[in-house]
Image (cartoon, helix red, strand yellow):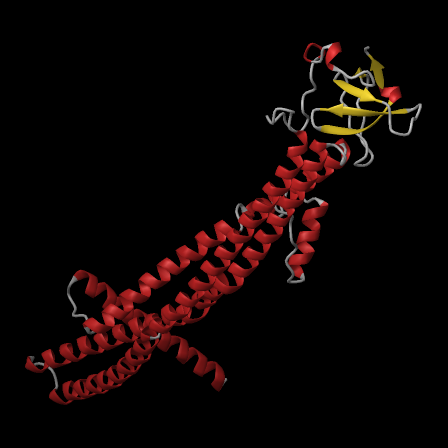
Length: 368
């Protein structure tokens, strides 16, 4: 019973305090009551904290958007809960993040699959595989950059917002309440003193009210001063937060520079690799003819221009080379063929531009 009575009294006191603050706030807005102002230095610290909070939240949001574009596309839908979404749901409940392949990973895998299907021995198929592998390396570098940027930059800033900044916001709210309490006490004391001039009131009662108001004012002033000092110390700590954010920003730039340097090196290596491959597909005059170089037409190869041991042949079907000793063929192209050093009834040596390799007789129609 005593506990219940204490609880009721406590609730009543809280309600009275809240009402007093509301009255004081309203009177300040109406201009009928004075407001205790903090010093200019404190106001400057508070303004800096507000700006820090605003821009830190903005930077975290923008960086998240750069590192994880369109995150909503990976959120489970209440209308379409596929097997993948079920797996995502359980990973989330286990507090583990399930890695999704990036667009670079998907592009790379499709290129590799296409190259294997078209033929890894063909110039085009080989190039697809090489480029696909490069895309996957780019995807891996991107994942490492995202992981590093999240760890060294985004996470520390989020931790600051969820920790120090929340504490600052909370303590500033407490300080504002203490300020309202203080100004309410000042208003009560002014009203009590104004009653001294009224002759129809008892002087003893007025003095008791004045003394009570003065006591409440002293207590409220002490609580306000103590809370102001606590809040001031927290606001001054923003300088340390800025220094830490600067280190995090430097780490972010370092991770980004490393990522782009890796990507550049991957592409330089890929260009060199492709260049060496396409050199084999260049025409006799040194002009590039593509990954599938066009064959000389019969009019470009007059009969008297060929040695006696060489002939022209039209390719009947596409042929995929099984190794580097064979020449891949495309239907309807015309090539030059000659006997192998070791005669073979089923094979001949084929030539196309600067390429040479064994070709099966069953895929050819001799033209002369």
